[in-house]
Length: 82
Image (cartoon, rainbow, N blue to C red; front, top):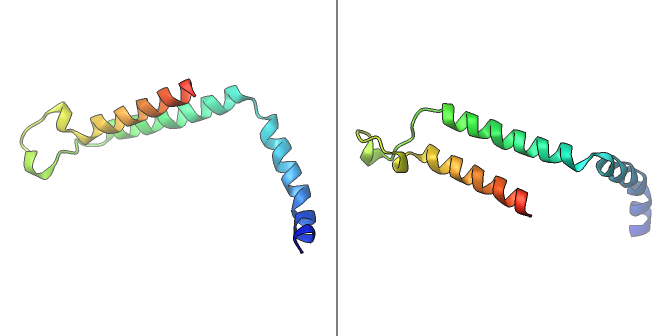
């Protein structure tokens, strides 16, 4: 049974493998950084997100957008390193 299922899926798997293998890594990196950049722009364009107790005070460290950008930068750095 397993061999029969594998025989059916094998041509599709070969096509997908060759398709993925044919894409240059530079394009993949550009796509990932483009997505992260678009997310960063989207987060910055949102209104400030402050905790309910601190609505009157504007502080960069209390704004959730700051930490969202920090996480995106951390993801980018990890992607560059590894």
